[in-house]
Every structure is written in C-alpha cells, then in structure tokens.
Length: 411
Image (cartoon, rainbow, N blue to C red; front, side, top):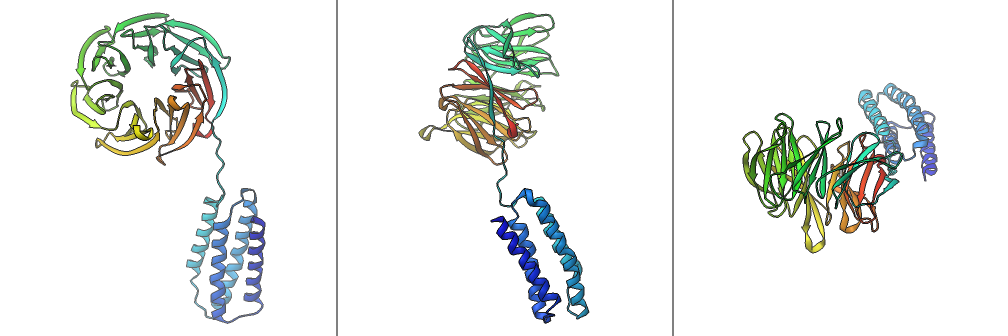
C-alpha cells in the first residue's frame, strides 16, 4: 500500500510541475493546481505510515519546497496574487506535522510485560517489599516469619521472626515493620543490630500502618476494633485511639498531615487531622467495600473497591481529589480486586484479581484497563515493585511462589 501511495504522489508531483512550468496554463488553472499542490502535502502527512522510509519522505517534502518557491515567483511575475508568507507557513506546518506524527496510521509497538522468573517457596506468601536492587522480603501469611530473598540468585538469605499472620510489611527509618493480623501486634526489626521488638497494636486484627516522620508516630488501622491507634515510636507506647467506621482496611498519611482511612464495611473514606487527632469529615462515600488507598499524584488518591457491582462481578477504582474532597471519576475493572501498586512513572495502576487469577494494568490517564496477565491457578494477591520500578513481584498464594515480571513499557 505504501509503495502505491508513494508512486502516486511522485507522478502527481511531476505532472503538476509539467503543467505549471512547460504548458504555461492560465491563472485560473494555476490556482487550481496550487490548491492540488497543498492537498498533495496534506496527503503526504496523513498517509505517512512507514518509519523505515521516513528519510525518503522528508527528502520528498523538502524537494517540494524549492519547486513551491519557484512556482510562487512565476505567478508573481504574472501579477497573480499569492501570499508567500501564508503559503510557506502552511507548508512548514505540514512538515512539522509529519515529523511529530511520523508513524501516521501505523500502530505503535508496545513491549508488554513478560514473565522473567519465579521463586518457589515452602510457605504461603503474603506481603512483599523490595529492600534494595537485589533483595525482597516475603511475609509468611499463615505463619510468624518473614524471609529475605536474593532475587538475582533466587535464594533465601535469612528469616526473621514476626507475630502471627503478618499481613503487611513496610520500611520506615531503615527498619522493617510487620503488621501481625492474628497476633494483634506490630513487629519492628532493626537490621543494624539484628533485633526484633513486638509492640501492641492498640486493638484487634490490625490491617495496615502509616508513619508520621515529623513526630515519629505510628498509625495502625485495627479492623476488629474500628479504630486508628496512635503509637509513639520513641517509647513504643499507645498514645491515643481514634474511633472510625467499621473495618478500617487501609490507611494513608498525606504530606498535608491528614490521615485517610477506608472503612470496608461502611463503604466510606474518613479524613482525620493528624495534628489534632480528630475528624475533619465524618465520611465520604467512594464506593462499595473499599480495601486500599493508593496515592497516584500530588492531588489524587486511587481508592480500590473490591465489589462495586456484585450482579455483574465488577469492581471500581475511584479517583479522589484531595484538594476539593470530591470523587473525580470511577474506573470499572474486573470484580474482586485485592491489592494494587502504582508504576514508577505514575502512569499505570497494577492490580491483582485473585478470584479470576489475573493481574490487570490500568492506564490512569486513559481511565481504562489496557492489559492483563492471566495466571491460571496461581491466585495472585500481594504485589510489589523493584527499587527501580522495572520488575513486578507477584505473591502467588495457591502455587506458593513469587512470580517475577519484567514490566517493559509498563514501568
């Protein structure tokens, strides 16, 4: 197709030159030919679709430029009014369009995520965090340990003791924190002196934690007690309990020093002033069964709703504006979403859907799902990104392994 178009354009150009310079047609004919000349340029821009022949087309366009100049000068001698400046602006604009949209109608090739490797385990994996370029920590979901693994050599480095059923791991102030759901405690591991400390979480069935670096405070969401416990990390003592809605599944502490709490049973997000340790809003409805809060920009949070539409097995991702406290948009995705991370470029949300054995990729700007990984019988739940954001670690609970994915263009 490309070759036919190229030959057609070349013949058209030569025909126009012959009629203009050798046949010396009337001014009206010249005017019509000039219109065709501009259509010819536009035709080139629209139908350009082969990157390998870009040089040929650019050369072809710049060949037209001196011919266009001669044509205009010839018509000026015959007192035919042609706006030289205007026509050259049109022409140069066409060239710029060609350079910017040089792939034309051809689809841009996307490098989709690819399976890279896997780490086989003897336990059911839970939460994962990346410590450095080559090391990740994997929580034993049904046990009381967390394991350090060498990603490059696929080997266990060491194990540390936690409380019972660590459901979330986080790093703060170079220390490893484990949220022990059935142990009703928080484990703090200091790698510098290889010490472990267990402190009370201030409630039952803790699910998530956040940190206040300005006051060295730890916030714990306790699903079984419907509160946010405030713990002083200097002393390890409970400072306060803030009452919230039922089943506070996740918590996020913003740079503005506000705590955002998603309450799974009451289908709300509650906002707390961390300085005053009291609510500034009673509740904001963001969807059905909110399970996680993910910051995706300075202004927006993504709220993952596990089951928004039970009748058609759909979930939603709600984009919440921190500035005006409004729900900007809702993105429909596969039902039963569990856990998500945002890519380093902050362009994609990567979300696990264990009930469908999928990991889905959502384009935040386009507001839609654009890709998925099908993991048959693996039951993917927890996710984590490598330090550079180029690798995705998937906690496959049914098959007891960590799947390593090269994110390619989705990093």
